[in-house]
Length: 151
Image (cartoon, rainbow, N blue to C red; front, side, top):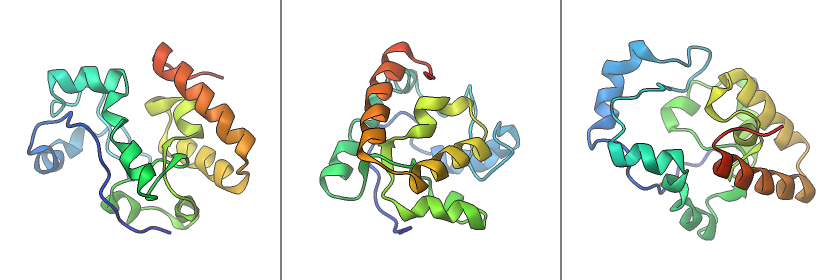
């Protein structure tokens, strides 16, 4: 429903990362949408790179799932300032609880453009099924272990 909540993650960035984001905006590799991505983001710490590579930084989100704020599978949550820049069609992504993993994550991870990620997440929202969730969960394990997307 678009409600804000505290998303739990292991720290993988320097403490003032949010302030540095404004200075790094010119290096955003995701110019097709509201998200900020840098493949060699200088705000990520050395230990943070390892946590992210193994997706271990996401584990605390299980607490969000237990609290009912997130689901195991669903569209990935975005920061409020990113959601504020969604176009009208992208607001459909807020119809389901956000997930720790989702169709976009197992279909290309951060290599996807925002429009492709939103298209996959919209497809997921419109075609939700328990079977599809189970397939995505299995693919997530494969993606994390292989560190790449699966078909």
